[in-house]
Structures are given as C-alpha cells and as structure tokens.
Length: 355
Image (tube, rainbow, N blue to C red):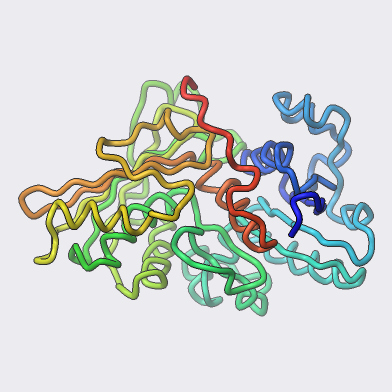
C-alpha cells in the first residue's frame, strides 16, 4: 500500500487511558487518520477537554456516540477500527460495527485491546471472565498474539494480549521455543497505576499508591490462562505459570522478572543466542546485556529484555510501557500489518527518558 494513502480510523472507548493513547498515536500516524472518537458516556465533549495534552492535535474534535460514527465513513471506504472498550462489552459493539460497515461495503480491519478476542473459544473466555461472550461466532475471525510471536496475518482482525501478558510472553517465548528451561515458570511483575484504568479506585488513589508497593491476586491473575494458551500457541509447549502481579508507585510501565530452572541443553551462551535469534528481526525488541530500565521504554513502543543464567537457574527481565507496547502501540503494530504497512509505521517515537 502506498504511504500516501489515507485510511480513516475509528476509536471505540476513546475516553480511557488506552483510548487516549490510540488518539495520541493516530495524531502521529502518516496513514491512519482519525475519523471518529467514540464514547458511550461523553459524546459531544471535546477531546481536548478530556485529554488536554492532545489539544494541539485535536483542538475542536468532539466525541460521537456509538450510533453516529458510521456517518463519518463513506461507502466503499477502507476503515481501521481500534477498540479500547471494556472487557465483556466489546464483542457486542464490534459485532454491530461489522454489520454496520457491511451495509456500506466498507473494507474493515479491527484490532481490539479488551479480552473479548484473546481466546480461541467461547468457553475459555467465559471461564476466566465469568460472563457470556457477546459474539462467539466471530472468534475465528480474530488472531491474538504479541506481534513478535506470530508471523504474518492469519486472520482478518486481531485481539491484542493484555499488558502483563505482553511482557511475560516476550520474556518467556525464546526460552520455551529453544527448549532451554523446564515448563514451570515463576514470574513477578510490577505495573503502573494506569494499568487499573481511568476510573478512580483504591488501588490507583495517589495516597495509597505513592511510595508504596504491594502484590495482588497472587497466582490468580486473569492474564494467567491467556499467557499459558498463547505460549503454547507460539511454542507448542504447555507451561505451568506461577504469576504474582504487583502495583507499583508510578503511572506507566511494566517490569517483569521471570525465573525458571534451566534444562540440560541450556548454557549462558545458548540463552543469549536464543533471545538474539528470536528477536533478530523484531523492530521494537532490544536484547540487552544489562537489565532494562523502565525510563528507557515508557511512552514508547519498545520492549527491552535481558537474560542471565547461573547455577541452573535462568532469569529474564523485561520492561515495556503498559499503555503502548502492552496495549495501543502493540495494537497499532497489528493494524499496520493487517493493512500491509511496515509494522513500525507511526511508532518511531523514542521514549522521553525523563518521565
């Protein structure tokens, strides 16, 4: 596709943190151009009023309701639909959007950041989220994986993995694919407060979060089954995941520490080689000799990863931005791929470094 071609873009759930990141990334994208930012609760409000930091990009643009976005898209057009709507409600919205697009013969690709299209079957989703899936007949039309773990575009639409899942998948895949560790993985991850969403709650209230660190949902986090299923999809290996998430005293970023017992085939050299080989052509993954740092990735689509082995134990350290690489940026990678654009299109902005 010619870089000069403009493709209109729609953002569902445009008032949350991930929705805001979609808007920010679209403001810098040379091909996708915002046609409508959609909200169930803030239709009519200016984007600049909800996200003042985006005022220069969208000084007068207003959000629209879910029954209004189609008006901005002409018949026979191309359309990129980014969804940041909540888990459990997104599938119904996307089903309706697909039907609406079909009435105008719109060529549509969807990338969703909720959990609704991260599982290959209805039962797996419902077992984790405890609610009926809103459009199980659409599951086969979506692929879900971190872009670096799956070549090509085996489906028309994509469901991006969760933010913790993205970091753990990128940390674990090279080891399992190369047979360098046992199947029990022990993972500790720390996330920033934006990972809990924009709606205030105790876990994101500043007096509770500032200068504090605490674990939650130890061994029971809902990203666990998703990680296990997607690692098996990528490597053919069924793992046992022992995952303990933590809330960190910062707004953005995820830092994951993965530990595993080394297999007989592992050595410090083979571990490093496995990561170098796995990510040799991955534009956004940096394999480092030293442990990564959050400030070097926050607000960018980069992932930094390092690995070490000593006395039969392998440790992998992985840092990403939860809102970009773990959500909107990874989703943008998928959308670029679905439209046959270079995967890096619109995602070159480096980390600011001094956040």
